[in-house]
Amino acid sequence: MNRRLLCIAALLGVFLATRAADAHFPWLVVDDAGKANFYFGETLAERAYKLPASLEAAEVQTIAADNPAKKLALAKVETDDFIGLKSTDAVDRNSTLTSSVTFGIYQGARLNYYTIHQGGKLPTERESLPKLPLDLQARVVSTDKGADVFVLWQGKPFADQEVQLFDSKGKLKGKVSTNNDGKASFSSEQLSSGLNGLMLGHTVKGEKGDFNGKAYESAAHYLTVTFHAASK
Image (cartoon, rainbow, N blue to C red; front, side):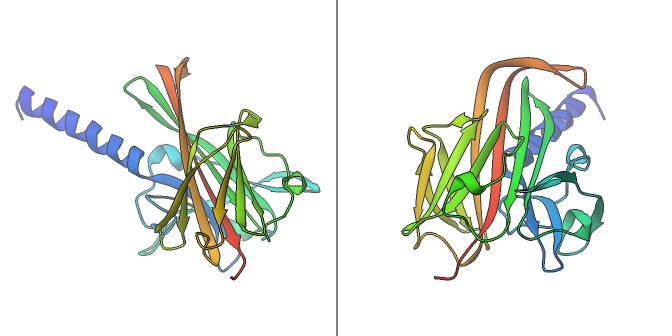
């Protein structure tokens, strides 16, 4: 292969990797067997997309209101309908699962992924939820009209951030921007009975550092959240 073709092939590889990073995100759910599932997909419905090597090292922990955080033992699983990591043991369905992992660096930007599965019945007060060790996070509470999502960035309410809501099949059900209190509200008509998913992103220009020997000049932070809504 001549030098020109090598350059084209290299650029194509970077382009495809970037498209995957832009269009796909890690998700956390609990399956019918009660095991935590960590996978990489465009929406929470896509569970058989190849897991990037950098995400294979992801750690998932379970957090309950009255118990310390506990790291889960995970095993890589590849089947026709699922590719990702699964916990070796069942988890408490009422607990919250979290993970944070860096995908890598592209064009000087560090790509950071945060995932949350908020287990159990949605509370009516966010104060009842355990604190999470994530820079970017969202907590979901039930309301008379549907659900409120409270977004935090480094522990403070995050305003003017678009939150996308998906149903269990990956269909977009709504987009709402947070107010000054970091709150985005979704109606009961937008929520789906059973599993729902949220997604949002935040880019920080000027966030500099070094990751695996590579310098970065900015950082992109992406968050996905899954939760169950009651039957209508």
